[in-house]
Image (cartoon, rainbow, N blue to C red; front, top):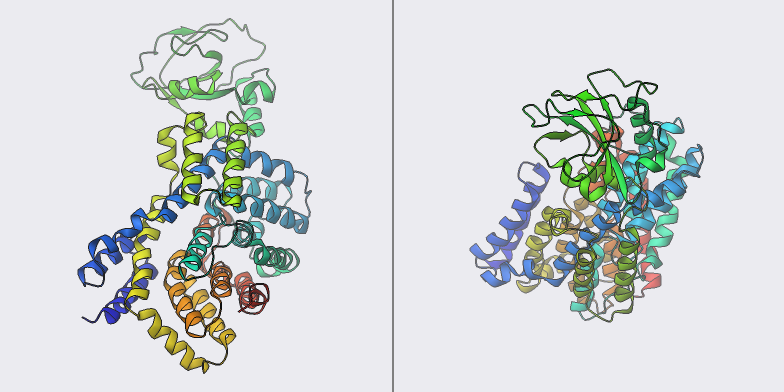
Length: 527
């Protein structure tokens, strides 16, 4: 089979597989790499080169950095302090939420920023008397706009910067994306704040599970166990409280305990005991002993590390894992170290002293050595599906260039546009990018379209920089379907959304993004 035809067939099959949703996207990406080798388009080392690409390594380190900020309570602290001061006005809440998610997305992964803010936004919406569905789609859309502020905002930014350098241009600076991203973000927030209530549905949300607020959890435990302690005594950066159930066939069954005694393992303090649905009487004798039975609930307090070890005991069942509780403690243990490491990584990226992948790896190593994260946490933090997707699609992007397939499409676009106007060619490419981005990953979309853009730029003898930046802006306009981006899917269940709820607000935003990509970007990065 002709290599060019093979590339187009593989791309078509991949798009069908992505859209169908029946095959895991990671498997599709690996299948693309294998198919490129099996058809003879690429050699085996070339087909698997994406898995060793420095860009892929750097993206993996960003997931770890996001986990560090989330696990130490940095994201919760930022969200609670700023959102808590926004009052109950929907427009003001929208503006503040947009500013917060943009700030977080600029330095950590977009998925991590939205995941950290979903429970906070739901709590704030309920307290303000607003249906969460009026704030959650705006959260996802404003996060996509915020991802255009820095190099680390989204993997797409890193990809286009790398491709621009490879095509004879230059890599974009760390904050250079903000020249396009900031006005796009301002317009997005304005549209959502002023017209969002007319374009967003009122849906009955699905109830969120888990803990969203340390103070609320502390109040619940005080009421349930009649514990006379304030919130800060229950949850702090150093210590916490967990509720455990005595497991069936536990060795603790039959043991007599009383409030104030310590456990044999880890020296945790027993605060209270609760049997069945009966809450203990706060006025009763605090030294009253209780003989433990299966199903009894016990409230224990101690250092977070000791609580984590205790929760792994086969004798008890933790109602809420200590790691989950620790995440909602603002500026918890290790927060300062995580912030210092983040600032150091950003400084290295901004100055360009070392390659991004090296800066990311140094940051991950520092997080482990300073005990902000454990090695198992590092492995769990990485979204391996995203990593495999990018690594598998990079060879397809390379194949578009090496086989001449990108040149074929570029010639077709130039023929369609008459070859007279690079702006018209840019418009066609951005429209294609936006359409494809509603059904397959924007990362995969940009990886496919970018070589075509490079070929058009070289053919028309114009700079590749505006083409790459325009693709970044167009790639972020994935607003019309819930499957367009992971963050769109994240808010679907908490907001109670349906498939057709996204396009009403998404369509005008997509048009705005397209206008910025085609008309504004060439003014900042001249053709």
